[in-house]
Length: 206
Image (cartoon, rainbow, N blue to C red; front, side, top):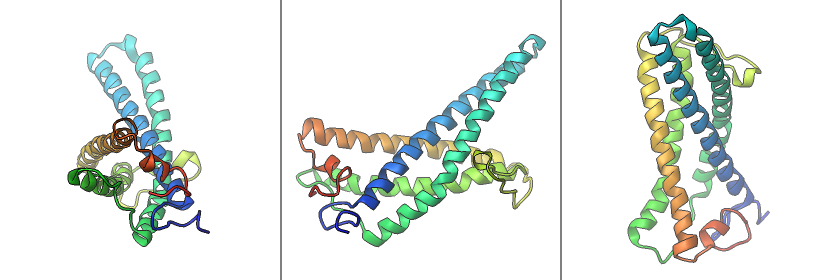
């Protein structure tokens, strides 16, 4: 059980698995959503030209975006369970202290960046479904089942929520980059592997 649960100086397997699950889901959701947004801009630019010869290309791009959005919605749907589990688990167990022998502001950064990421993830998993529902569409995770809109179409809401969702995603990606750079600093500059070891192995002390 000591390897499964958190200790005073190390994370257990539950925390480690939840940490990496959230990380990979964030990356998958961000890049699928970002690419879908880029494709949307591309076909909207082509549509604005009003050239009938571009219709086939536009339809192809729309199909590619639909495929990406199915992946994005499916991956994001997994957040509900994983993020809830992570919040409950972290609230129950607390957070290990930051790696010692660091400047005070870096120790505060190490504590608050993960907390801010959880807040932003919460905003995203609520705003994402509401965007779809505000247009009156159901949510269909990986096409397995449908969750109908509880609100029906709401004029103007989808656009505002999309802006919040997109910018929250960019801020979240930036914080994830800060998180990764912090780990690289420990490894490359400080020559300290404790930060990485305690989130990859339950047996390593912090």
